[in-house]
Image (cartoon, rainbow, N blue to C red):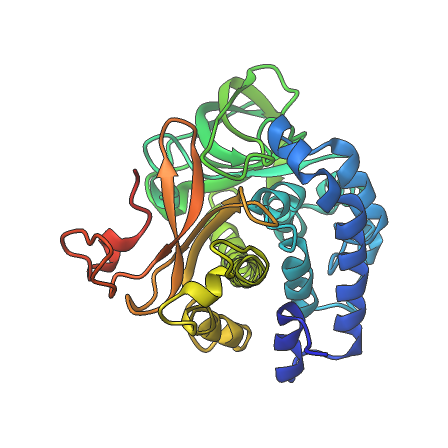
Length: 381
């Protein structure tokens, strides 16, 4: 029996052994039991239940590769175990699951890396136990993630910082109990940036829910700070030295997102192949009606090589809708001759559908500049 595509890549890498397979089996069982049956319900609700965080903590998912003294699994696990976990959390085909359930992966590391011992012990255990949710606040309205030019200010007044400003597109922003907040405490540029741990229940903190095209089960918010008083002991690391901690955090974020994108590519391929084999129209399966039956295979080939990190991820985004795992969007920036799945957004509902793109076929419409990859990505209808 052929090894499932999801499991093939580890056997070709020297970085994986039996311990990684054990993590795979454990997380896969958790996802099958506690996540996959309820994804549609959570997508409709627009958020994950808080109880899922507690269940994930009990299963060892939240604490993987975090210090044992704060409730994590300890140092026996490494980055590659985390990549396996990312792969398995992607299996339901809903990007919002990993984004919202694992928000502590971007909010907690700065606390552990630069925070005081008192701050670590006050915050980390409850987060890793799934009792509290922590988010990261970097992006600002109109400024994106330009960390060096952020405008949210924190002025020191007596025994507290007084914070004023706003952050937007904050993952888990509506549910978060804590936010690791980037603020300006000094002059312009990277030398004036600090990090503060802000409890979202503090007076002056308000939130506005944001609706998105996808990742519906991941709550996203704009958070406003109006004269919010934050005690000095909530400073993460030295004052005006937050830029380095933020950049350090971004490295792991990018790697995790790349691994997730590759996993969604494999999901897309597996679902497309399953659909093409099972559905019959005009007494034939769709794969038998294609002028070139190798299209799906050519799409899959580059994604099977991704785990060695020897080429860029070619799948730009996936969401849920239609087909077995109900993926809502699929997109690839590959060679125009590749057989791929293309996302076409529906502006009125924010939903998308999967459809094939074969621009080398003369009988299919082509847009001006069809060879320009920037125009090939995600055209809306």
